Each structure stands twice: as C-alpha cells, then as structure tokens.
Image (cartoon, rainbow, N blue to C red; front, side, top):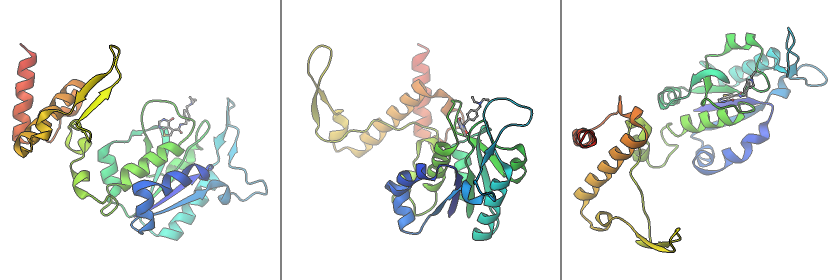
Length: 253
Ligand code: 9D3
C-alpha cells in the first residue's frame, strides 16, 4: 500500500516513520510512504503556501493551487484510483471501521491542514475529511500520522503477528484484559509504605482454561466499567455474553 502525505512540516514525519512497526514495514517494502513538502508544489519565487482569508478575519488559509498540484503529482506518480484524505476539525471522526476500509485501498494521500484551514475549493478534490477527535490541535500533521498508523497496521504483513491485529480490542468491542510480566512479586511504594504486589494466582497456575476464563471476565468487567458504549455492537462469543449478563445482573442487586 502507498501513502503520500502533503505537509508544510515534512520534518515532523521523519522519526515517527523510521521507528517501530511502521519503519520496519517501509524497510521491507510492504508500505511505501512519501512525505511531500507543499512548498515544492508552489509556482512563485517565494514558494508561498498560504494567504489571508477573503472577507477578513484572523490567521491564514492554505492556498488551493499548491494542493491541487500536489494531488496531480501524486496521481501521476502512483496511478489511480487515489483516495485523498483531508485532515480537518470538520471531518468525520476516525474510527477503527474507517481505518479498516482505508486499509483495503491501494493508494491513499493525506493532505495536512494548518492555520485557520484550507481554501474551500480543495474539498472538491478530496474523497473524505477526517478528524481524530474533539480537541484542538495546531494542524493536521499529528492527525495524519495517527491515520497512517491506524490504517497501515491493518495492511497484511505490516504487523508480524496477524493474531494480535485480529484480536484487537476496538475490532471486537472489548477492552484488553490486565497483563503482567516478571517478577511475579514486586515491592511498590505506597502511601502506607512499601507493599508487595503479586500477579493473580490464576496466571501462574498453568491452567489454560482457567486463564482464558479469567481474562474474559476481566475484559468484560473493564469494558462494562470504563467503556459501556463499546458493548453495544460488540462481537462477543457465547461465554463472554454469559459473563456480561451475569455482571449486569450482579450490578442490579
Ligand atoms: C477558527 C477556529 N479554529 C481555531 C480554534 C479552528 C481550528 C482550525 C484548525 C482548530 C484547529 C485547527 C488545526 N487542527 C487540525 O487541522 C486538525 C485537527 C484537530 O485540531 N483536532 C482533531 N483532529 C484534527 S484533524 C486536523
């Protein structure tokens, strides 16, 4: 799969793309990610990417023409079909479902918004507009990286362990169960002095059926406590549904 990111801050992508799962997938050729500097698509001597808003008001607006030229260049380079995503606070909220849909495409371009926004006429060449949530950032670069990461890890071969992708909490609608690693007992500082904190016995028992049941109970309990909204539409197996019914019944006592 190919990604093209159009930005006035290409340096913001260097380290995040070089590190971790995404960096390795790029090295292995499973992903092809090109960061494109919007200034390279200007036609004037001063490489101007923004201008004052018509009608007045504070701040600057990203000009349409460099964006159009960037999209044309990406299309010429990658071929069609090209899906063009614009990051914007007005966009639909990015969800796991959107990430799954985008991960099945061959070529995605992401345009990073900045300042007070992008000339409205750019939207005519945009396939979809995405926000990553209801909080104010200074631009679309971090959202673009978030979108890329959420989508790319779903592309076959990007994450080594396909099982962990399939078991994903947001795909199934259940939060993760608690995880522990060695040592089995740990002394932790607390308000009443140091305390020994041990891993739940069941995880050391070697009884895999018990461990599986315990994990399911913990995952259901956490989801019910912290994110009950996820449970409507969750893809639970029979055992999980039974645990959930029990816990809801317990609550009403
Ligand atoms: C006129 C009001 N503007 C400033 C408060 C609105 C505004 C414009 C541009 C607010 C933020 C931004 C920059 N943000 C993005 O480009 C952005 C974003 C975000 O801020 N939050 C969540 N997702 C996204 S995607 C792009």
